[in-house]
Length: 258
Image (cartoon, rainbow, N blue to C red; front, side):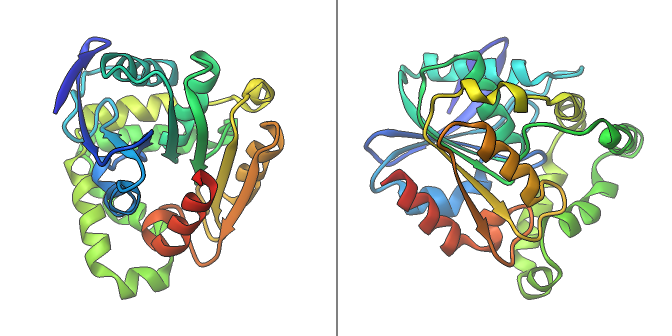
């Protein structure tokens, strides 16, 4: 299904029935990243998954995106679907969108789950993002596939689960260059930590103990900044902890939402 908001057509799916639970994916993935969690939770929740601007079945306009813009896309989607309140789960870029939205549009989230994400990208990381933009612009996303998989999953998991890696690689390859580049302009500008004290939403922060992209100390900074937030660290997991340790991830999410 599609809905036109904020100047673009956003692709979304809805499963199950109950209170609303919205899921937001990482950079270079799509809403199918949440298939296992949607299947787990749709008996108790009405699960809304959407493709972020520039990803999946959502439009990918040219130009640099901003996190404010991505949060406003989300707001337009919630308004368009008549969702006044929801719980929200975002991983990596999805968590950044969640925090930005909670500050920009307070009062819409009942609970918030922030997975493998950060509230601030240090300035010294800027060259990494510039290089990704240059690579994608010049050569497409293919040269980024293997390095991304190596960051997102532990070596042991990569060896044991080639099927999962193939599915994620397909999502990366399917990401339009314009969408990847647009979001790569937005992410390194993230700097929310000092403002998170204003977030009045029960929050669970999930980290992977082997995540080099958004390590445990970044998760802890979020947990310390949001009043009353909880922190959980998943062992033997890197960046896509929902795919690498789905059973433990699911148990943590169910316990928190219960």
